[in-house]
Every structure is written in structure tokens, then in C-alpha cells.
Image (cartoon, rainbow, N blue to C red; front, top):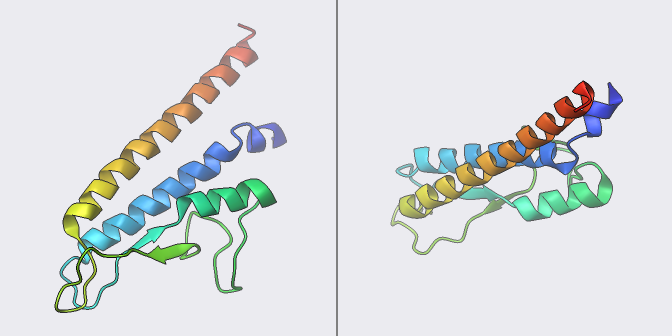
Length: 127
């Protein structure tokens, strides 16, 4: 049904982006001891602005994936406070803090969508 495709607006895309960001941060944490690993992040605000302006995510290269659920689109390297001798730029305490914040933002977006679903249910019941 087309109505349910747009019922939640940008929040469905935001939830997918937040999930992708949590995955990228967890990869950073997993590679904290990998020599030469460069910490990355998702430029959430930039991606969401692109979605709002174009109605769909834009890519800068044909090799990029067209939606946020998968792929490496709109990835940025994080600027480290200090780089390890082996070239690794993961700061584990910063990544843990980022993951906690990202998880809280994911939960907030999920609860907002759940509230919208409850509103749709009430409307369908005629309440």
C-alpha cells in the first residue's frame, strides 16, 4: 500500500541511517588493535539533508550504494586526537561514547516511529 510507504516520512530513512552508523562504529571498535586501520563514521546530517532535498539519497560516484541500509556511501574518516604508532586512528573511549550516543538516538527514532504506528492504529479503529 502506497500510504504506508510514506506514512513515516523521513523517520524510516533516519532509522536506517542510524543503524548503519552503529554498524560502522562497531567496526571501528572491533578494529581498535588493527595496525593501519582508519576510524570512520557516517555523515548523518549530510545524508539526511540530501534525502530531504532530493527525496532519495544521492551518490557522488556510481560505485556508491543508493540507500543507507548498506554500502559505504557518505562515509567520512574521523579526525583522531592522537594516532597510534602503528597508524591506527581508533580512540576506543571516543568510539564507545559515540556508540552509546548513536544507540540512544536509534532508540529515540524507533520510539517516534512506534508512536506514529500507534496513531495509525487508532485512526484505523476509528478512535
